[in-house]
Length: 408
Image (cartoon, rainbow, N blue to C red):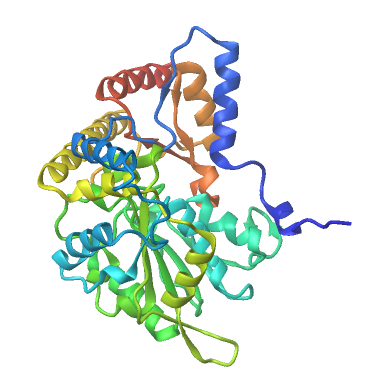
């Protein structure tokens, strides 16, 4: 008799975005003539930058000739891309990160979900609330969370992010082993200062903890005083792993390319207290379970760092930030409190009611899709998230419809 991993039975309901898709599908079936504007899932809508497309084409042409064809590449990524990342994303900001500490992958979602595999199942984990579901759900699957009671898993330390702490969680009151942080935050759009991030690094060093830092939205930061990487913070190399993505930066959601940074002096411990290199462990896992991102995709990602590519990427980010600014303006004018949308593509809105009810109301009355905050945790119960990833014209139309729907 083959047995299942019963931890999967502890997962709550369906995956958030699957449930959203189900409700949209039901609405479209019932109202086939209604136009729907999607401001829910964080999927980009603008085409790839021309520099990336040109590099993509050149690389595909190389694959068409025996003399330039490439088969399996290095699992960790081609040196040409890893070098650009190390130089441009880290060393240029004073962060001491080498190219051999960078692992190219097919998505930050995959890496943030997979990284937990190299740690023990009985460690104590701190996860923000609200939170991107993958952090929590993958630990449920691994059996670290205990049972689910009254809306939470019994073995998780929840880091509540609310208006009272400006949606930046307070340090845990007791030591924890693994800490998930995400800034600019998904779903709230909140950002963190260097001083507050330093306090997290100091906590991790004092308690021999490890921070998993999701910086997938760092390209949206326009405030130069904010950290673009955790490695701008003193001591972070010893206690932090950082995840980055080309998905939101350059629109790679459909072609998949990201990277994870694991410094060589980042350590974890075995049951006897002996130190082990996290870099070596992740390299072993990565090499065993992953065959690398395709050569054409990595060449397209490299083009992001060209002079033209940087300009084109910035133009696209600015376009989405313009959308976000409009949402903030219109939502505030309707009397709702919100955060995010300034250095982030997400606007976190206090809907002052059940978030799924608010979601259904906007879908039914306005034909607008948002994301219900309850799907991100207990602290998201009365909130909705609106994404800036759409055309400016659609965002204008959506905000006009929402205004009418809320006044009915």
